[in-house]
Image: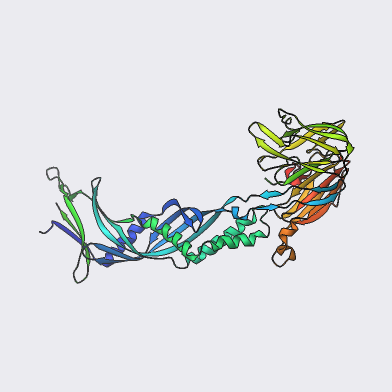
Length: 262
Length: 211
């Protein structure tokens, strides 16, 4: 059965639609919590999408490779320093009033918050499906994430691991009574997590933005004037799109095809 | 929390007094300096009975100060000591705002916020830096404590834990400190021994307005 109206775009045009949709989506932000080894992490993150190459795969997949995600992260690590707890010994010295001894003083180390700011980008490849909806009198065609095939974080995990280590050292410097325990503390804390954990954290944050990700590639009013009014006795001719479907059709070059019945 | 200020005795402080007058020292404990509020009075007033005779050796008696529901408490609340013995007060850390000791024995006032004679104040320094201190009550007394963090390679780095057991004495006579400047390691303790002073405090100058 043929449709009343058919529109088709090839992969080149589909790329143009995607990049316009990325720009229209703008910056998205979220916040949440995760973990880094034994330490809790709260974060806020903002991302924007750009680039990527569309491949159309029949019957209904829009594969996007190399989708670039630029992100800015504000992490706050919560580090319990109680493993450093120790006691100052009883100290006795001679004074003009005889030998005087202080009592033993036990130092309880706090849980510190370590802020880390970090920005970089990742490249994601994933498969999107087609979703057509009628919303407030407009037909909207979205591509919606179905699965993330790959996340390439580049060198971000290494850089973030270094940034976290530096931030921890700075934060510990301000902790009273840490003294020469500073190096020991930094060593113990940074040994508690490594590249794998940082990679996992970054991937988790990227996945938060990928979950449910959709790009709007087409929007059209359900009812529109097909012919303008020609005069007082020749009114405009309106057309109502009763249904719209979207699919990828295989031919000598795959195309994204929109079909409408009026 | 660990500021250098003898008017607020905190976890890292110790205040001690040698009693050289026989009689009963009735005193109060205040969670704030005594010039701001009157000391709390426990149901059973805190007291130290100083016997008129000296013991075979000078003894030191420690009193632990804690927060309780309706104020401040001391353990033990009552003591009997020999003439010339020393009593020292410290907190178990439950008094986060600090406390002060004030009372009288005979004609003598013993006040940790305004030390005059036979008194010791100690402070353990937790962070490196230069601490210039002065008397919050306006005398000309002053001094400096240089606190350094031993770096790896410094022999004091490896032996830091043992170094924490060493104290450094500053002898305050009248309005003069000797030595005026001392250098210690992070975590070490300075003892100020106060004699014939006009009622002084040991206060970080950054806490003093106009300094």
